[in-house]
Image (spheres, rainbow over the protein chains, first blue to last red):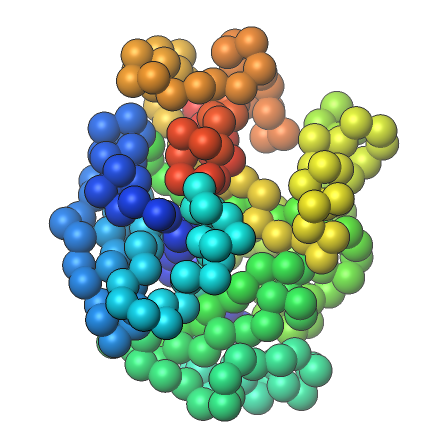
Length: 134
Length: 134
């Protein structure tokens, strides 16, 4: 069912500093910062040869990464995103398997303009999993 | 400097259960469990289309993931591994940049039989980073 690893999202308290770490120290190709107010984050994309890392800083009130950063003030890996060909089929298979889909269970349009769902960390080895239909 | 994302390592308290989650619920290609006593872990490889996830369970005493699981009993993302073409050049560049390399700073032979180094999470957005020479 899952295909490519679409991205690993790293929540950071200071996006400019995090982007500099990836650009200067690790020598990666790093995008400009992009504000995504609908998603409550500002993002920098780190383009690797086979996938990407997304550095996320909270934007506005009720950012979905605010509570994570309260618990992890230095930042850390927030979620992992896997690609699926059919997100409704994926959801139905997961629910039949007893896994919990977050929210109302309906896909939302994610930060890349594609349908996404988030799965409960307790059902996935303590890891918040995003599924993205590609 | 960094090229491909080699793997994301997820520490888990129950490897058999974690492998079943990835195999059955997420429909991924999952290897048999492989004991790596020199590295203090038993590993299952989840082969994705572009990279892999490694599910790690502690093996023996002094496992390098034991303290992580004490703090995160349900498991979670433990480290992220980036490939570099020349690990000594990477290390020297990082040290010149002020980043802390863990241990004595000399590459060790990692779980894939290749030279690896680990970088201090405090210098990398709260994320434990492994570099692997490929």
